[in-house]
Length: 62
Image (tube, rainbow, N blue to C red; front, side):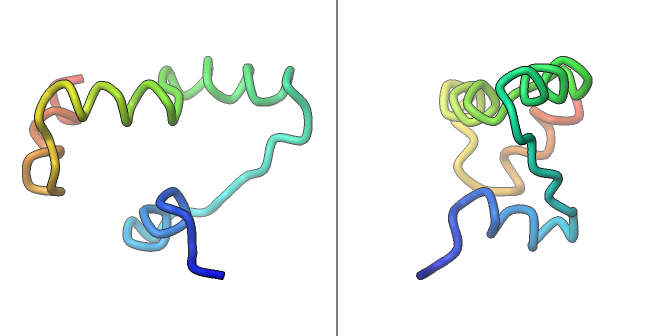
C-alpha cells in the first residue's frame, strides 16, 4: 500500500509521527501545535500553494 500524503510529507520533512489514540489526545495535540492537518491543507489550497516553494512563504508568515 502506498504511503498517505501525510506519511510522504513527514518523510520528506524528516519528521516523526506521534499517534493520538483518542479524540481528546488528538484535540490536545492540535491545540498544542496551533494547527490541524485538515485546516492546513485547506489553507494552503486557498493560498494557491501547490508546491513546497509556494508553501514555504505561507508557512513562514503563519
